[in-house]
Amino acid sequence: MNKAVAISGGVCIVLGIFAAIIGLVSGMSVDPEENILHDTKTDGSTFGYDGDTIIVAVYAVGDVGCKNFEVTIVDDGYDFFERDCDNYYDTQDYTYLGEADLRVEGNYEIESSGDIVLVSHDS
Image 1 (cartoon, rainbow, N blue to C red):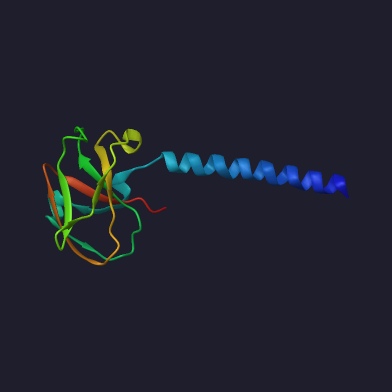
Image 2: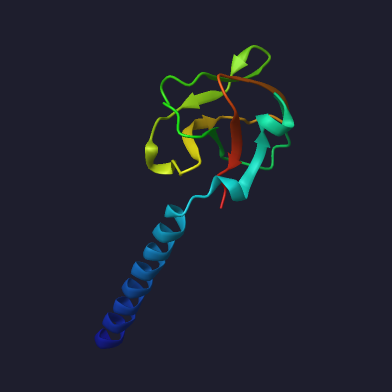
């Protein structure tokens, strides 16, 4: 009985390690181009949020300085943009600026010092 429990425990540990590796690898390959919700260059400065996306990431188009790039995402006078200059999510074409903490469906006005894209980080 103890041998069977030890073997099944070992199998569970190995499966858990494989699942963790797969999760890390899939999380490392962030491509904003695949999940764009809104592009200010083509869609304008009003973003209609439908409530379906939980994590809305904000990227600047191109290689820009995150701390100097101005962004506001406003509804009823409140700014929903939360800056996070972690370059982990940066790509060759986009600079990660942070997240938009959107919880209510509606239209949000975007003001920025350059073109940005709003991207779904839901997986």
